[in-house]
Amino acid sequence: MIRAAVVGGSGYAGGEVLRLLTGHPEVEVVQVTSERLAGKPVAAVHPPLRGRSELRFSSRDTLGDADVVFSAMSHGDSSAMIGELSAAAPVVIDLGADFRLRSAGDYPRWYGWTHPSPELLGSAVYGLAELHRAEIANASLIATGGCLATASILGLAPIACAGLLDPAIPVVVEAKVGSSAAGSQSGDSTHHAHRSGEIRSYAPTGHRHTAEIVQELRLSAASHDVAFSATGVEAVRGVLVTAHAFINTDLDDRDLWRLYRSRYSSEPFVRIVKSHTGLHRSPSPKLLTGTNYCDVGFERDPHSRRVVVTAALDNLVKGSAGQAVQAFNIRHGFPETLGLEFSGLYPI
Amino acid sequence: MCPECDAQVPVEDGVERGEVVTCPECNAELEVVGLDPPRFVLAPPEEVDWGE
Image (tube, rainbow over all chains, first blue to last red; front, side, top):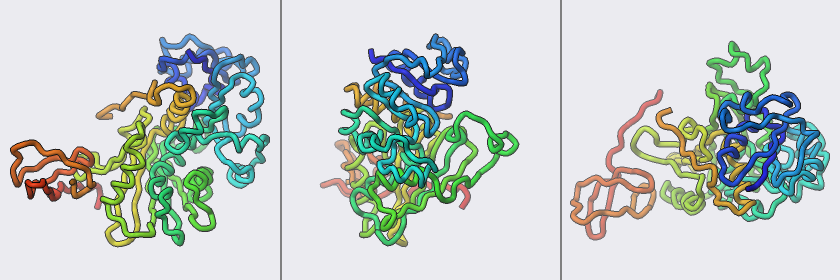
C-alpha cells in the first residue's frame, strides 16, 4: 500500500482527493492536515467519508513521513513550504497553481507574487496525463492543471498541437463554471442572495488560467494569443468551455473527427461527444459530475474557417483531484484508471 | 465508412437498402444507400430547439 498524506485537506479539492483516495485499493491515507480544523474528525467536514475514515485533521507542523503528499493548500502556500513537503515524501502532487507555470516571470504577471522557489519550476511536471504521461511517470513534483485550463487545453490540443491555428486570429475561449471552483471559504459574493440565480462574468479578461493554456498549447502571446473569459453560472460543479478556433486550412467535420480520434482514441478519460441524434449531442458537465472524464466536441462553421470546440468536465475531479489521482497512478505504475472508475449518474 | 465521422460502420448480413443503422463512433443514424460495398447517407436528424 502507498501511504498518502493530504496537506490542506479541509477545502473542496482536499475533500475530493480524500474521497478518491479512500476508495483507492492501493492507497492508505495516513494523515490529513488543516490549520483551521486541527483535531476535528475529517468525516465531520467531508460527508462522503462518514463511516469510511477515522482520521482527524492535524496541523501541518506535525507532518510525518509518507510515500506521497497531495497538497491542496491555497495558491502560494505550497511553494512557501515545498521544502517540508518534499522532506515528508519522495513524491509531491500539488493541486494548486504554485508549480504549474514554467516561467517564474509569469507568477508576478498572473498571480501577483514572486515565486519563492523558481529553481524548481523547470523540474516540476504539469500533471495533465494526456500531454505529459511519460514525464509524470518519473516526476517528484507534479502540478495538476487548473480546471478551466484543463478543459480548454484538452479541447484545443488536437488542433493547436497539429499547427492548424491561424496565427493571425486569437483563439477565443469562454468558460462557464460552477460555484465550487471558488473554494469552500465564503465571502460577500457567495452570499445566497447575491449568488442564487446569478450568471456572472467574473473574469472577462486577465484570468490566471490563460497562462497555462498558452504554455501547454505552446502558443505564443505574440502570434497565437488566447483571449480567455470566465463566467460563473448557477451550478455547484462543472465546467463548460466554448472555444472559437480559426484554422489555417480547409478541414471538414470528417477531417476533424480523424484529428480528434487520432489524439484521443487511446485516452481513458477523454471522450469525443458529437452526435446528430438524441438528447445528449455535445459535452455536458452535468453528466460528468463526480467522474474523471473530459468530454470534447467540435463543429466546423460552414460559413468560415471557425471551429467551435466544446469541452466539459467536473472541476473538482478531472479539473483537480481526479487529475491528481490519475497522475499518482501513472507515477506509481498502477493502472491509470484505478480508483477513478465512477462513470457518473443518469439522470442527475 | 460513416459520412459524418469517417469511422468504419459494420453491417450485418441481409441488410437492405433503405434500412437505418447507427454509427458506433458518432451515433449518427445512417440510411443504407448501397450494398457492395456498403454506402450510407445521413438519415434526417431530429431538430432540437433550446431557444433559437
